[in-house]
Picture 1 (cartoon, rainbow, N blue to C red):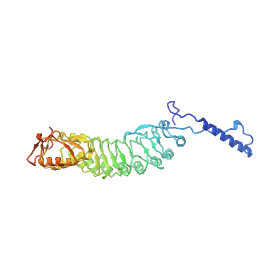
Picture 2 (picture 1 turned 30 degrees about the horizontal axis):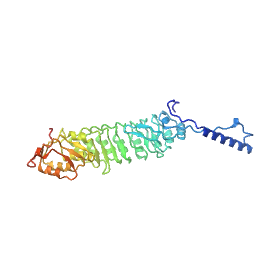
Picture 3 (picture 1 turned 30 degrees about the vertical axis):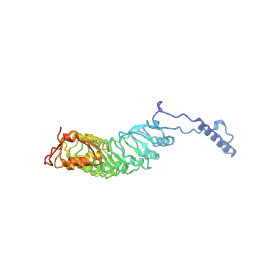
Picture 4 (picture 1 turned 90 degrees about the vertical axis):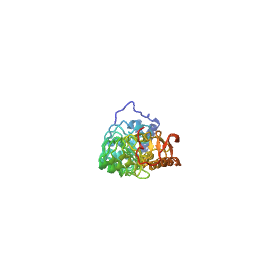
Length: 378
């Protein structure tokens, strides 16, 4: 346990409880004397003073740097939940007033973990950077919920399998920077709401394919700024109608990545502004591009696509149909030329909000002329 620290909050002793303990002790001694047990009359010196447990708050537990099984048992006996402590997990700032905060612990053995597991109202162990399978098994043996292990930087497949199978682990690993396919496959068995792997900045197609089999409702990959086309195709297999793949920091897009993600089985969340800005800057406007943009945008969200100056290629009508299906407010401020079919599609949409220049400044082409200049930088 940590040494006494004057900055640590300690609740004052409770004299009323002490007096009750002393009174009970005197009564027991008196009864024993009446029964001839203990050798005579009780004196003040014979009084047994029963001290109440000194309450320990989360403010105190959160600075404990080491813990033995015996210390853990005493801690569970004395711990009083309720302290409001905000903890930055690397994924979010959270407050868990009922949790046992042990974020200064840097190591934990299986025997001590088995004792801590008896506290079922949640445990935070953000200081652990590694965890073996035996300790993980002991820690999850009693159904503690939630179990926060947001400091892990390394993880093997056996430990990942134990965590994934538990009902209490929160699924958050924001500091895990690398992930092998076998570990990803073990984590894929996690059935919680969110599998958060925000520490990953790159993944192989094999790891992506393993993650795509995840049973979690949402797969968070918010550390990814770039993605290979092969990894994108693998991730597109994730989930279903109620699932979401979150890539909120992806900033590098090409046609292959967009085409792959546009065909995702589940929903995809991307930085729509970054995607819109890339159109016309190396990323062509296609039906797939529009579908992905629309899927990532929120209802009524305003998005400008300044790189589009023409809509009269052979795909113009299909592009216009995709634009008309969006729930966002899309703006094409630099549009100059449009085919009559595409214009009719945009104007006739009963739900879409498409902002285009006034009719008198638009050049309505004779028809689909076979050109591919829908996307040209203005």
